[in-house]
Image 1 (cartoon, rainbow, N blue to C red):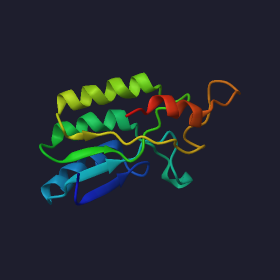
Image 2: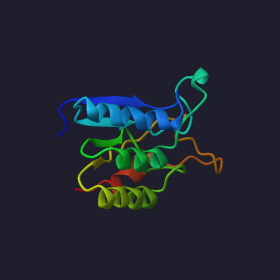
Image 3: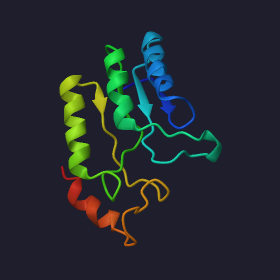
Length: 133
């Protein structure tokens, strides 16, 4: 488990700035960095929201030892199917063994909105079947 980590966040810089932050964090001895996984920025004037699953491979490639992962990824709902999250996570772990950490949660309404239809899925019910010991 990481001892000292950095919350790099998302949405307020260019994508490569997040990768550079991971490189600098490793240089200064941090144990882990965490990236936000959001569809839309938290604050309107941030005007950007980098796609976590595209930033992560670049950050892992540019660093050697530091662990990294999502602040929270929501594999429930319409934005990211659990199978895609599983495949992406396994690929990152195979590429950089032991360095990628996946943190899952239910998410927030603004980022997990149902964009594809006007029915709302029951994330609480679905999460019970997804997360098993």
